[in-house]
Amino acid sequence: DGGITQSPKYLFRKEGQNVTLSCEQNLNHDAMYWYRQDPGQGLRLIYYSQIVNDFQKGDIAEGYSVSREKKESFPLTVTSAQKNPTAFYLCASSIQYEKLFFGSGTQLSVL
Amino acid sequence: DAKTTQPNSMESNEEEPVHLPCNHSTISGTDYIHWYRQLPSQGPEYVIHGLTSNVNNRMASLAIAEDRKSSTLILHRATLRDAAVYYCILRNPFQGGSEKLVFGKGTKLTVNP
Figure (cartoon, rainbow over the protein chains, first blue to last red):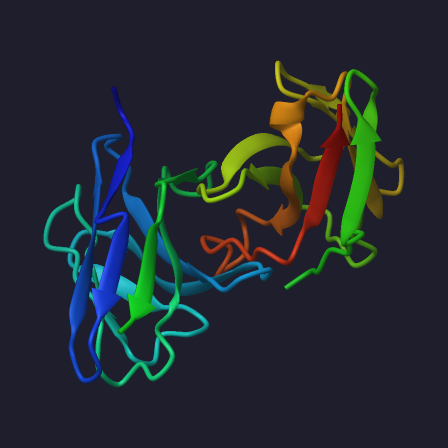
């Protein structure tokens, strides 16, 4: 079945540690996105990519980094510079300007 | 970016219709109205979208006001599985930056058995 796979479902980060969240899609979509969601809040855009080897900062990119080496993959690294990383992270993909398909999310917590 | 305003929460009874409102008074002529919903602990899913005319699909109906300053998502018979946060979003495919959707807090719908 086509879709978006995020892993892991739960992730714990120690202070000063970088962690990477995986996002893979087999929908052949050009565009991919990373959102952050805090409890009771809406989604905030971290980074997005419209094509391989290109990506743009969203509204809250500080403390995060991404890469887009393959069309299917858009990993997100939460660096030690992100002082408040605890949140629910959502990856999405789309054909440009069409509807977004979301993964099931990764819950990141700080130990 | 054109903004939307939704009630924080609404409540409905099972098997009754639900009308979820959205105000977008600054909408431009080429803004599409999109609705997504997010079930607990899951990613959002697309529900429906439209430009000017009312739209129907298997999940819901979208009623758009004649002046397009407001719209209503209609669930014809609410079920317990419809309990979710519903997001109303504007998207303009002809405007730079519209590749990123802006999600507000949405409306949390509670469905009572």
